[in-house]
Length: 122
Image (cartoon, rainbow, N blue to C red; front, side, top):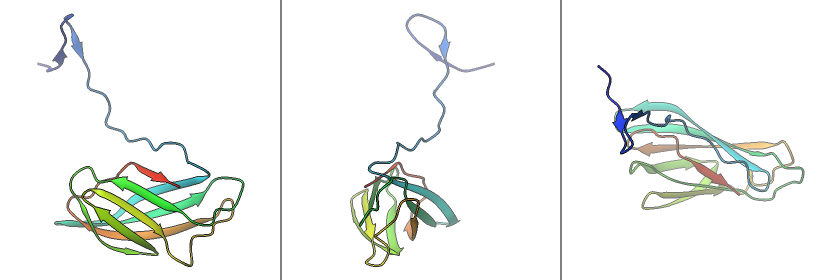
């Protein structure tokens, strides 16, 4: 016996898929987030920032909003601020300049359940 959603016109609908898409890079900057480790109450992640444009960039910023109340506890190869669920990570002094095609990676640890946020990169 199947369960579905019924709308006023009759019939059933299927819920949308639960995939996350990353918006196209802004000004040549793109960020790829991956969870590298999890444990009860926490997680570790790595983010690779890539210059996909045709001109060098001199600084980058990656931002997102956590979907479930997670908290950043530590960041390496970048500096961070978190206000509520909003996180902003900026390059460190040594990894902000990226030639076209070049990338920099930063890592983080956090509390809560690991999640893959939708990010912006500028």
